[in-house]
Length: 173
Image 1 (cartoon, rainbow, N blue to C red):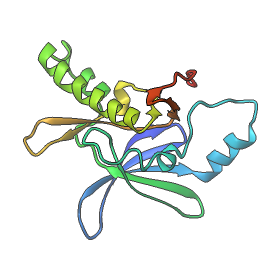
Image 2 (image 1 turned 135 degrees about the vertical axis):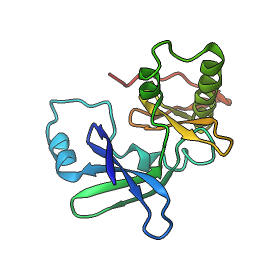
Image 3 (image 1 turned 90 degrees about the horizontal axis):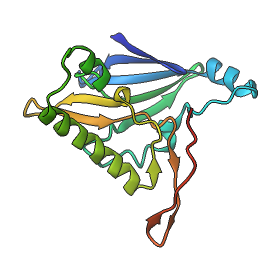
Image 4 (image 1 turned 90 degrees about the vertical axis):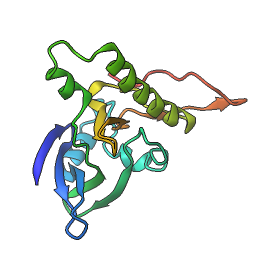
């Protein structure tokens, strides 16, 4: 239906299911762009283009993590289908509020972000790129915003020793 935002390796579009009429977000990654980046070994990217495929299972099962619903491809592109965040992201919301969120609103929203991060850590995944753009705002049944973290592009799996997280080096920037 419309382009929502540009992504590092493609773009994200709003779409509607033909039979269900439900709204979805589809990240479209162009294979030609991915091949160019793979050939250029002098450039190091900290983003992994198909990270949603790698972490699809770990992103399931939390109200505060945007779950991938389907991944498919054709000759030209990879398509990653997710829930549609009608409220946009936290950065865009903050830009519309000259005075920002109230303390209570900030606590309410950031608690949800922390629950999403906790879920990923419980799955031994460190996101390493938690930003306002990666915190999507969904409208809940009670008309309250539900925050879900997304985009594991810089995520990495960390080991555990005797049930305790083992620190790993930061792989971003």
